[in-house]
Image (cartoon, rainbow, N blue to C red):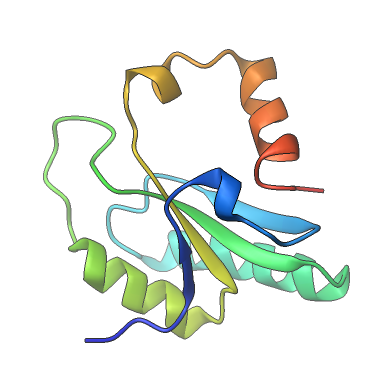
Length: 112
């Protein structure tokens, strides 16, 4: 299956000036996940910015993933998202302070 949504593997690749992103474990795109993602899409369209999803490549906890990465990408693409940032949930990311995380969102992902 070919995914046509724009995928970024490094925050430095994100070239959109302003974004609205959804953040979650998104281990399977169930109804609550779809609501969160659709809300960011609606916000982005209303404010003329690009909509994105921060999607973790690996599970946050040692749990089973409900859907494969390809399946999750397919679901997200069908919702109409503009881009996906594939993120490694590693020790560095996990240990980021709240203020550093906000700076990351603002400075690297251009969240407004």
